[in-house]
Amino acid sequence: MLDAASGRFVQHWLPLSPEVVEALRNAGHRRLVGTLNGVPIRLAQHTIEGQPGLLLSRQTLRAARARPGDTLQAVLQPDPTPDAIELGEEFAEVLLQDEAAAARFHSLTLGRQRGLAHYATSAKTPETRLKRALELARKLRTNTLYGDQK
Image 1 (spheres, rainbow, N blue to C red):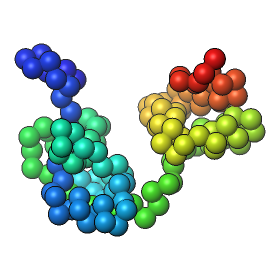
Image 2 (image 1 turned 120 degrees about the horizontal axis):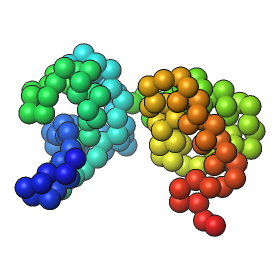
Image 3 (image 1 turned 180 degrees about the vertical axis):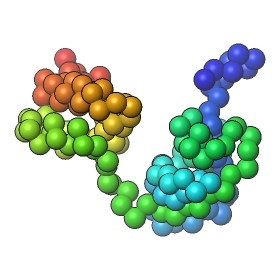
Image 4 (image 1 turned 60 degrees about the vertical axis):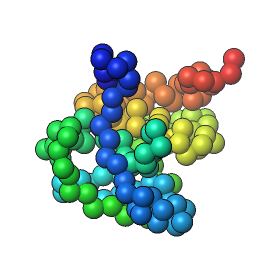
């Protein structure tokens, strides 16, 4: 969301203390799991304008019954499976049936895989999730994903 007064992009941000960041860095971790006001979360650490923290979606804030500016109860720990990607039922099934799309998907970086899986699974209805999964499979198979070289 754009702040009209300053022209800056405004985000929901949970700052992390320098001690937490240093402990994570020393352990080689960037991804975290835990709870936010009791709601399970799984996020990557980011740095904006020199301040490390977690970007929070509106859905996460809504689930945690929190509003921007509220004090939150966060329990965080390093993600024990940082490379795990939640494909969702529909996307996993499409990849099982389309070997070419699956091979291309698994050749991508983990970050790219995570982004595509998020797009496929973030839809509210099963019909839309299936539509997105089929669309991604076609684009994976035909090398027409955003950013693919022509």
